Image 1 (cartoon, each protein chain N blue to C red):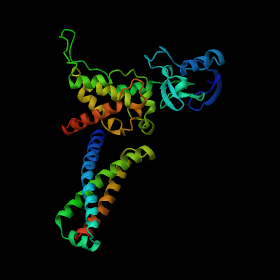
Image 2: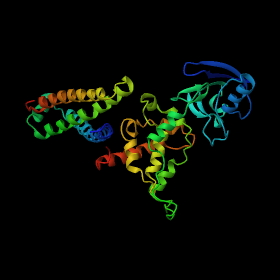
Image 3: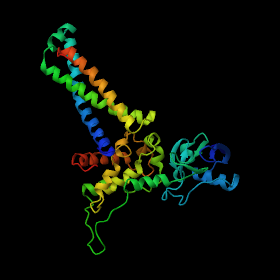
Image 4: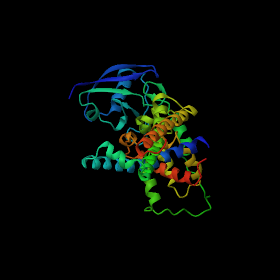
Length: 116
Length: 239
């Protein structure tokens, strides 16, 4: 893939993942506020999320969107503020995205009880 | 009104110094009047550039108190009510001497952005009919009045952070041509303006739009290019 095509798709991926994140953040925050006001404890919440394929799919999507969106922004910061360019800056993208995906998936696995 | 203006003017090239002058204050005085007074009465070696003096040519753009402006259309009353002026060469361009910059990188980037019309007809063809109310014609109209003064380029942070970034003026001109139904260079143009050196590097800070003396909106043009290049990428037309 040429550099220009890659960069154009990165921009599209960042915009697309931003749209997914907007929905995920909204659902996550509203859910948190509602359940806390309803008096549920952390244990109660875990009791509902463990083994629930719906919440597992939701938070897996959330983590995937974060792992796509944030590294593309960090790539831009690395280029513009730190002067990292070319293949090195794409290395930053892959490493940071991998770390976010791994940490995020561990959290999803812990909350939903899926073996991670 | 004070009797004089305390003016600091950049002297030398990129590693020059600020030189102080006291210039008599006058009614309806422009920053270009101030620079001209210095050159004619205080220091004849001062280098600066101007031509029309009425906001048509765009050659007198400089940094005035840190902001890129046409000096001919900038009144001292507006930018220096306290009577202190700092006048430097236009930002993000190599300084030739004093207040004169080398505009070559700016115009080179217009070429790299394919910001030139590619004709598809000959003199033997009938005139193209472009309805003035068509969406494409309106989009082109919104940016067509650019005179290439470089003020937006000097105001853009991304140009500072990414030296290869094409900049708002070149991208604005490219967008007017993307909307020109007579043009035959669209695919190559979208290829040229896509990616990290092109429209996708824009942060939408809108510094260019705020600074443009013609009240154009290069930010809107760049947003249009982002949409057009995204569609081209999905069609497999970005190589």
